[in-house]
Image (tube, rainbow, N blue to C red; front, side, top):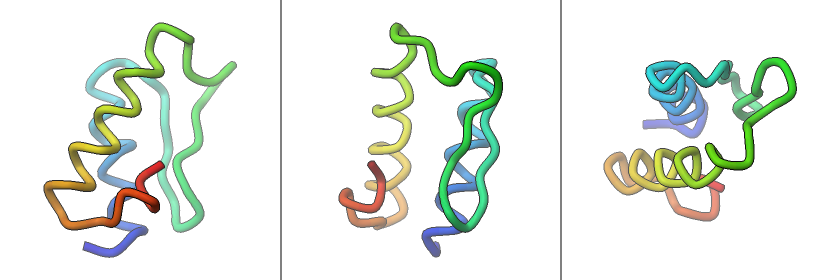
Length: 62
């Protein structure tokens, strides 16, 4: 999986949690005002889990 595919995958999973996100080759962008404070741990966990599953270095997953 490339880093770009990783960004798309993260955005897809976040949408399952009703977090507006769009992934492209430069990163994941959040709609509206961004991610609420209480949702930030969820977003971090999703990024790390997907990175570990598909072998993306964790430095790129942040």
